Image (cartoon, rainbow, N blue to C red; front, top):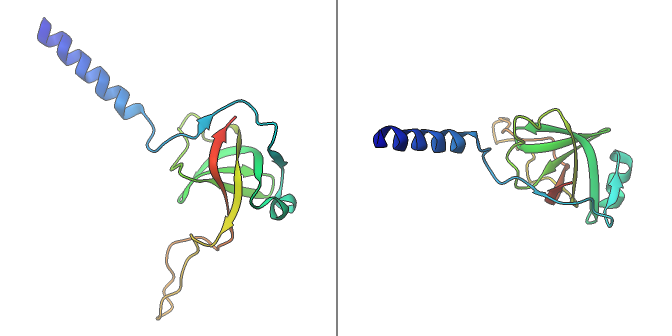
Length: 130
């Protein structure tokens, strides 16, 4: 009987561990009053280096979790993926907006192209889900 209970506890703990998403989730916090609302690509260039709020749909991409807004896709730094239950759902994330070519595909000496993006990727540093 004691072995059965111990085994049940171990199995329950293992199932819980497997259900936990990989990578750190962004911090949840109340709506930030000091963040600029970023609704689309037109406003993004003026907001580089500033704290912004991006409203869109949570999606997963090869490079990590993204927020798909209106004509704008923003990666959430340090977040490998959204939990399965969040994908495709509305999300609001705040953070400092940057733009980078760090993930840009490269061309080798014989014309081979590496995995990567087209460059100019929008990234939220220190993302926090509201």
